[in-house]
Length: 371
Figure 1 (spheres, one colour):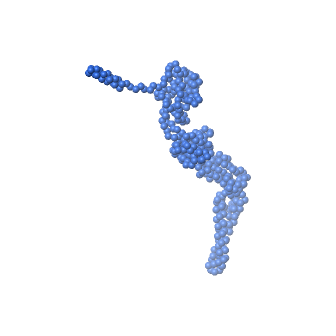
Figure 2: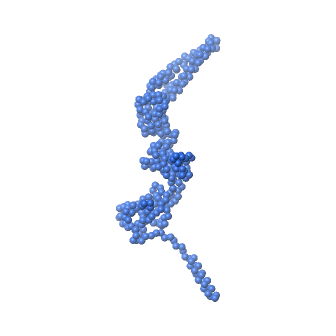
Figure 3: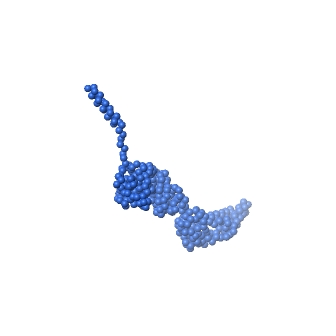
């Protein structure tokens, strides 16, 4: 009986040792036989521009797509008005022209301008007499040689004329005429120039030679493009994911691609459009497109490392996407599940092939035609 128990224990121990030494089986990647797949010679691959490569680890981010416009801040939009009524003499620039600060834009003429300058000279010529008369009456009043009424009348005449002169001087300086220089040389200007108040691009030119304009007429509108920014409309459902500092990519209708960063996230939802405004700043060069240009944009969320291939590596059939795995000198069509995308690459999800597995990264559509 003891011998039987010993033999049973010995065999049980051998069984335990054998099981402990057995290694788990590794998951083997899909392989294909030499007969399956699509065979292409090196010459055919070169002729079709087919290139192979391996999948790569790449940082990519999910993104929110939205639309918006290029805008200029209020302080960069400048309107030019005439300070007085006048007739346009000449128009030098066209919409789209860049003008520097102080550049001559146009000139206005009107009989009222001449009358204003003439009146200023006439008032200035009367002031010395009225001042002397006032001082004389003041002296006579102190010696009881003149009545207070005569003194007060002289004082009123002088101070009224002085106030009138100061007002005329202010009006002349407001419209760009140097009142002191006019008084010194007596030369009356038949017209006044209008100068550019800032260095900017002209977006509106609302005048032509011979047109009568007044203080309520806008002559020019200018935009300083050194502070252009983005105003994007983001759907309310996506707004919680948008944070200041996130990366932006935008594309204009002309194909210009630009980058930027989220600066401010709006707090008010447009109930009709169900969107909120997101304010962004450009990074690097400013756009060539003017303010008001419509654009498409992507706001990128948190980055993550994924397995990815270039867009050219994928072919689409219906709602499915495929890549061509290159093994044993043949290409095998493999269905894949894609995820994140950026301008050049696509994420591959549940990719079970070894890192060294080659895939057609260029010319995949040519291989598909050979099926």
